[in-house]
Amino acid sequence: MDGSVMSYYPVFLQMEDRHALVVGGGAVASRKVETLLEYGATVHVVSRDLNQTLRNLMDDGRIRFLGARFEEKHLEGMFLVIAATDDAALNHRISEGARSRGLLINAVDQPADCTFIVPSIVKRGDLVIAISTSGKSPAFAKRLRKALEGQYGEACGSFLELMGRVRERVLALGLPQKENSRIFQEIVDADLPEAISSGRWDEVETMLETVLPGEIGIKDLLER
Image (tube, rainbow, N blue to C red):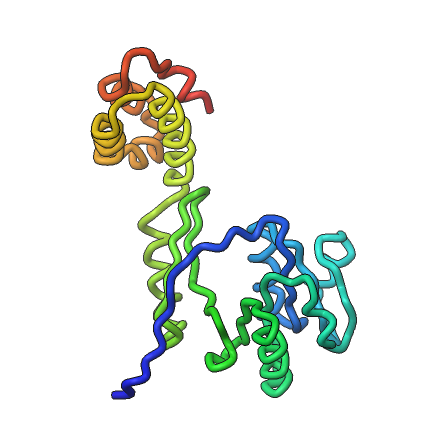
């Protein structure tokens, strides 16, 4: 066994309005770009060639094309960088430039040139499950993602929207922290996502009426 095992600190990044650079124009690069856009990043792309997905995004004004050849100046003002070309030497050069500026860098399939790795993701509204094998087996991470996608359906997103409204109303009452925790835990333990998924909103309403303080309007919470 190799004693120098790389370990990664799990973290979720707030990318809204942050600038990200993706170098590369193929399928891998376009997947990275689409994910960054989904989370609100301002995405800049450098590549000799752009696939149709990236061309469409550029034509729609959703990404900023900086040119065909990577230059060090492209790193200025960036928060995060992804090197996704088929040229390992170029990816390494991009990584060195990003590191020297203290930028987050992911070089696809080149772990030694990364300061972060991208997990496999299950997203259901505000529920985000990130799966990583620390780079040892992306294929296994993909398998786990598919299993979790089957286990956690779209109802989880609807449940979290409801819980966001519940939490806001409960905290506004100024109850003791212990009481807040009891309320939230009882709601979670009631398995409301399954009832929501089946459209059994009468059950959801009854459960909330049982647990929540009377001054909270249940009808307002359930507006959909």
